[in-house]
Image 1 (tube, rainbow, N blue to C red):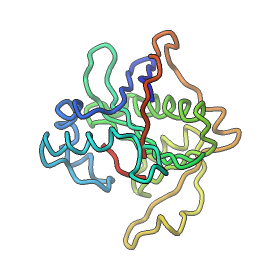
Image 2 (image 1 turned 45 degrees about the vertical axis):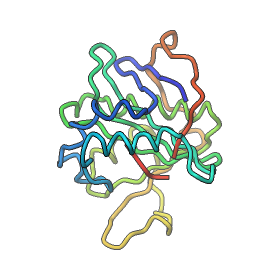
Image 3 (image 1 turned 135 degrees about the vertical axis):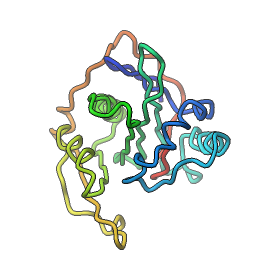
Length: 198
């Protein structure tokens, strides 16, 4: 993994030291309306979680866990995270932008940059799961070219109405990225993934 830069954002590979900066944003109850995870119990709890995720892979080594925290480049403010769980050539992604930063296009900007990084790393299909009622998230995926497909059996849960989106083939190649190539950092030796998220 490496640090990534877009027009407005710096995507930093997740580390335990990010816990304090991310804690307040992740405690917003409204943010968790469509999330599986509950708000973090404490900064220390979040730090320990991030410490585990910063190993960048599952215990059996079959999955890579790629997690980035999102920061505004001009101010350093923490605004959310993006993540990918990679197994062979397929990645499942997730993303969160804190509520004060909604409706600015930051999620689309960050997700597009992550997808470009996955694509350049050999990923041939990117998947995402969204609650059917989460129209904001579904519209983001559609704008990026994701296609809604039948929900896999392993993803079905009683009482949960999820949509399954896939980006592959030509659509994956067409995802555009707004970045500053000269500012993109050198690679670091890290990696991450299944659905744990920051």
